[in-house]
Image 1 (tube, one colour):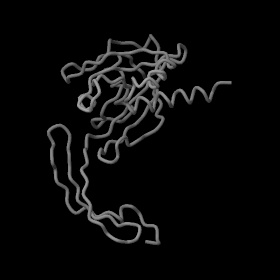
Image 2 (tube, rainbow, N blue to C red):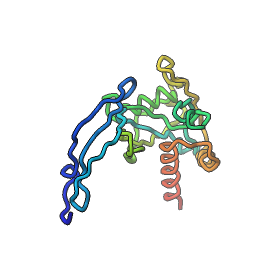
Image 3 (cartoon, rainbow, N blue to C red):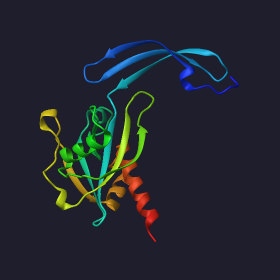
Length: 200
C-alpha cells in the first residue's frame, strides 16, 4: 500500500458482541484491517470499556511534599501483589468534565479541596484491551485547603488511607518497588523532572 490513508479507512467493523456488562462492558469486536501491503485481514479483539478517567498528584511546593493514597485493588491481588497500592487520587469521569471530576475525587479521597488544577497530559494506559483515556493533573495544596479526612466513599466499598510524603521519599519508594501503580509513577516522575529543570 504505497499511498497514505486514514486509519478509519483501514478498519471495517464486522460485528460487536457484548461478553459481559455486569460492572463495565466487555466486548468482542470482529473487524477487517487493511495492512500496509493492501491486504485485508480478519481480526478479533476484546475491548473493556469503563469510561474515561482522571488522576491528580497533589503537591505542596513550600514543604516539598506530595499527597498519595493507599487502597486495596483486587486485580493486583489476584496477580501476586498484596493488593494494597499506593496511588494518586483518581476516578472515572461519569459524564463530568475531567477537571471537575478530579477536583471532586481529590476531596473525596484526600480531604483537600483544590480549586486550581493543571492538566499536564493525557494517556491510554492499556490500549491493547482497555478503552479508557486518562487525564493527568497536578494541583498544589496546603493545610488551609483541608476540609475533611478523605478516605473515599464507604458505601462504594472504598477504604482509602491518605499518605503525605516528601517528594524525595516518594521517588525512593518507586525505586524500592513499593509504588507500582503506573499513573502514580508517571505523575511523580513528571513533577520531579519539572522541579529539576527549574533549579538554578
